[in-house]
Image (cartoon, rainbow, N blue to C red; front, side, top):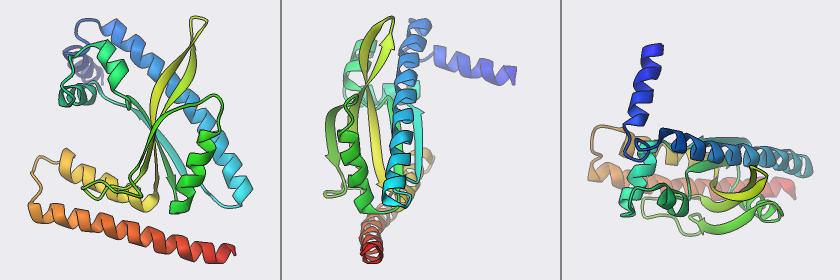
Length: 218
């Protein structure tokens, strides 16, 4: 176990983003982790509130993650940014991320609307990939928010990405990501087309399931 931990530590320290100042990297990521913890606490309160009010599980699951150093750097390179902490903080909005899963498409907007009403949260921007899916077939609602945290008696706001999607959308997105980005083999054009078609089918099924559920509510 010690050998594995040492290998991971050496890998992190060799990363070009943090090799100049490992302590500074740890401090910055620690702030993002604190922001993530704060927003998770708030979202779990909202989960209980929504589920009690609507008498069913509007939110079924909440998960979170911090981007790895490698992922941060890859994104900065893709954006053609100089690899600095200043650019990382200013231009990489999804270092801290939260995924909210629900069962029905309408629930996505219920969740979005109640997040908008939280006074302690600032909404930076939204992207609705449900009304207009990505070319890959990906569907979800993304929000970039700013979360207040206290650092040395000062309140600062840290950006966090929230993804809200149905369980079906999440299944498709997770599978597509593993197939396209986590595999050593390049996906064929035919399989890419199939994934796109299945993404469209997921949206159709989500709509039909929502309609059935609404009928039962009436």
